[in-house]
Image (cartoon, rainbow, N blue to C red; front, top):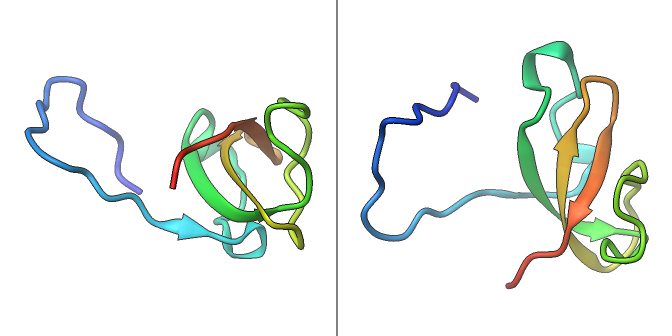
Length: 78
């Protein structure tokens, strides 16, 4: 995923892809701080923020790469 240009202004809707935890790109030094959305987290993100994301569940969650693993970073709306 290319870096986000902070000078770009988006007018309108932005659609982001959804992943399952198993289809996320590998967490690495190149994507530290990047966020993605998953549809199969096995723990409620509001109660487990900062925990390593694991799949196989039914929770929709925002996840953030720390360079080593993807961590739960919060909930998101459908």
